[in-house]
Length: 162
Image (cartoon, rainbow, N blue to C red; front, side):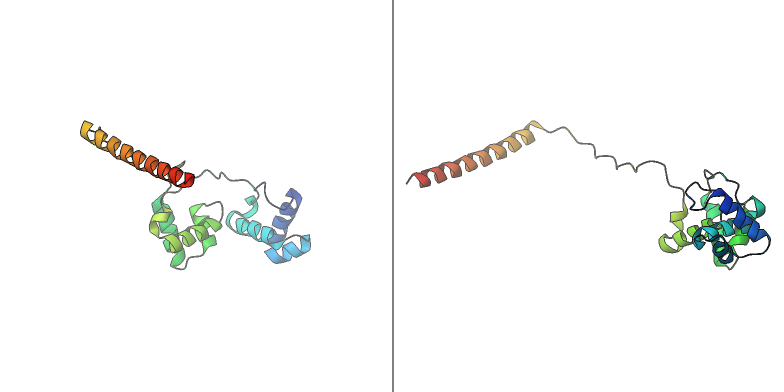
């Protein structure tokens, strides 16, 4: 179970025990006096894994594009996310819901694995060495701009002195 859960270990165990005797998630939350959202999440895990719902599963499992796409298509065809999560041995039925939302909002390619790390910038176009003529023209333009600027400064100075 996640460390960030708002329930204590005892509350999670009590919730699973209530599920085992037939209680629903909201009834169990009311009985334990806790927020129903956390209990509903545990209930989903319990429906997939049964009594082992509180056993932490590895979160480092990688899924191929084809695996995700097949799961999403089966879910969209009407299969239950709980049944799919059991069959595919997923840690949570929420994964299927998440993949379906990504597929619906961003399309098929969004399910493809992302490369780790920051995206690389496109390679810069190779620059050709500047010819002597180009360098001299660029320097000439700079010097002309400098002369024009200094001429205006001198004109302003002369105007102020009058």
